[in-house]
Image 1 (cartoon, helix red, strand yellow):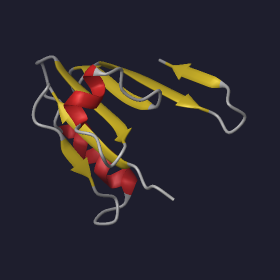
Image 2 (tube, helix red, strand yellow):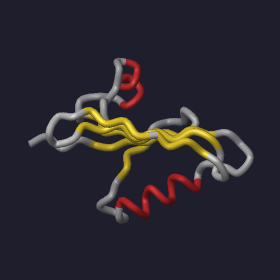
Image 3 (tube, one colour):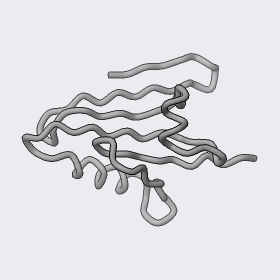
Length: 94
């Protein structure tokens, strides 16, 4: 079984691996959202990446059909979640 790594990037910065085994996933996500500043537009993207791929290269190749993306400020943002259900149904929430 191949375990996918999850990476995030804020404002197009260097991608960083999300390591939920160090902290609970919910706590990690809450912390990531604090990186979005008040009054300054920011972006946050979180996606699973196959082991053999580089995050930025993978995104430029079309990326994953599963991702969480936020854009705006810490005061007001849009959150977009794209996933595929167990039955294969493509879901897109904004």
